[in-house]
Image 1 (cartoon, rainbow, N blue to C red):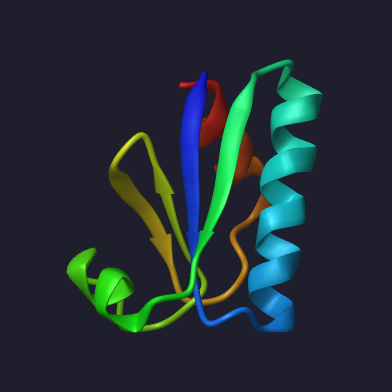
Image 2: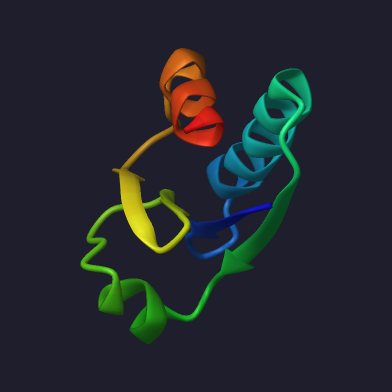
Length: 78
């Protein structure tokens, strides 16, 4: 199971990123545990300055804006 965190204050883009992660995981047949991180101190701890950010299994893979669907699929599958 992949551990995916979506970092952001809870804006519409952050909510969209959560749904994109869930959709990409379902399409790839990969189980994911998706959590939203809204605490600014915790977000800063990942070195994220712009949101939404995406962390897969402890590694920051994206920051700022919505990710491309093909990138997201690759991060989920590997």
